[in-house]
Length: 375
Ligand code: SIN
Image (cartoon, rainbow, N blue to C red; front, side, top):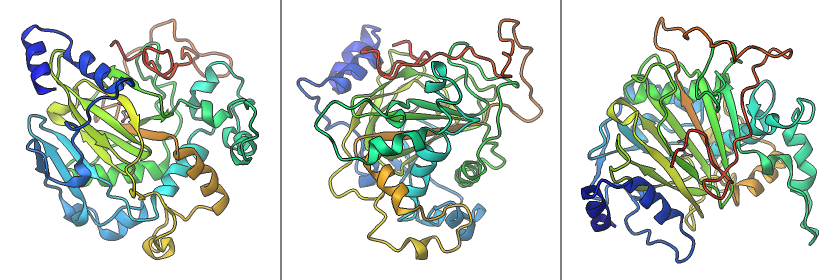
């Protein structure tokens, strides 16, 4: 792989696209031996330890959002990627189910916006969780069942709602950002050296086992000096982190459930993509509710609560074959405001601009292509 990348760099080709296709390929399956696995520690020559600031987040505050004490986090950097921080599952045992439930049950609720809103009425998308319960809880009938709304969910936007058509955020497409996710984000960014982070926009991506996310740069936020946070839950993924040009060969790494990535500094505006979802490693059970005593590990919590067995039954079934990713962004710098809106983005009767479209959920096969992907 390294040799292939080197020869392509010389010829000025789109190396990122080639490597994306390599990892996406099903037949024959690619060789995964170059993929960095941070859960194994500093076992790769590019991986270095990252220094965090344990003093800025108390153990009690960390536990409130389901995080281990900062001194116990395993944080890494990557040589050649200043500002990139990978935290290998800093969550307390038993706390991930809460975040998964927020992603599946709470955050898709109105007033947040999701892909299903692009072709369904607000009343039809009002209770995605409730409307999916029957389909997700009943045993397979042997017949081809229609997919539940939850299975058709591809993205949800929070806070300043990202407009996939114009690739912008705007002041009049804003609904309150979830307070629990703000707290989680603020603690992680503070420990990484970014005090005063404002969680203003979120994009949640829902991946089935054959989904991918195309090559893109997250540059729509107006202040790029603020970090971008990414959380992974459920099945694992291959994540590719490239350079500022498509000719730059990307580095491949696994993202497992609970992993957190911080893209900041020079790594904030790099090309990246998810070419493939891969099964969570055998024996990797950070999502299990049993095997720990959630009541003990979450005793100081006022944010993360133990979820009900019924909710967990649905969540665990969903993530057995799926991955959920949440990205959290600060859009505006201190004192910054949005530029004047162009006239074609006028509000509709419902008070919400409808320039979104249903982003299909697959690169090339038409299943997860994102408009911010130009691969
Ligand atoms: C993104 O780049 O927006 C999401 C990446 C991921 O799913 O890990």
